[in-house]
Structure formats: C-alpha cells, structure tokens
Length: 121
Image 1 (cartoon, one colour):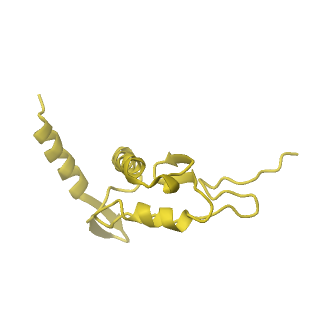
Image 2 (tube, one colour):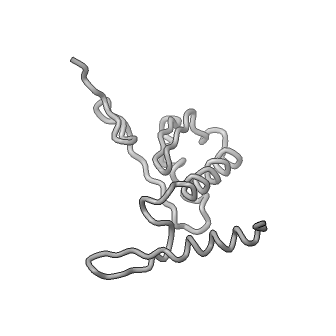
C-alpha cells in the first residue's frame, strides 16, 4: 500500500521530469505540468487559490460571481475594483509564477472561453 510520502514522491517526480520535443530538440520543462495533460494539478492549485481568496479578501473585493474552467475565470466584481482585485489575486501565490490578468466585456461580448453574443436566425 502506498503511503502519503510515497504518493508525494511520485507526484514530485512526475511534475519535475517533463520532457518535450520541439524542432527535433528535446527539452526539459522546468516549471509546471505538460500542456494537454489532465488538468488535475491545475484544478487543485486553482481551487487552493480560490479558497485563499474567499478566506482572506476584504468584503468589498470578493467577487459577486466566480466561475472557473481550469485557469479561465469569469467573475463579476464591483465597479472600479477590478484592478484592485487583480492585484490582490496576484499576491495570493507566493511563488509569483501565477499572474492574473483581466479583460472586460466589450460590445456585448465576454472574453471567457471565447464566449460572445451569438445571433440566431
């Protein structure tokens, strides 16, 4: 039976030994998981950040709506506080490897998973 330490060792091995081929050269990925891999690690990390946000954010910064698919987030924040919320989010990750950015609705289109206003005829 695997112990917790064994699982952690295996997980560390998997996350730190990712190689990929690009233009006939083999490279070792130094940070993160391989693109296209199951989003388990990304989801776990993002859920951790979400919980930290909800536990530590001042009430005026907490989004009214927060929906996420892997690393794409749709949220509704109070008007005028988007920049402040983004700054708060960027300070949640101590490694400084995760950087949140934001886009706002324009012309009735939402830049979330390429959603937009569709015309049905």
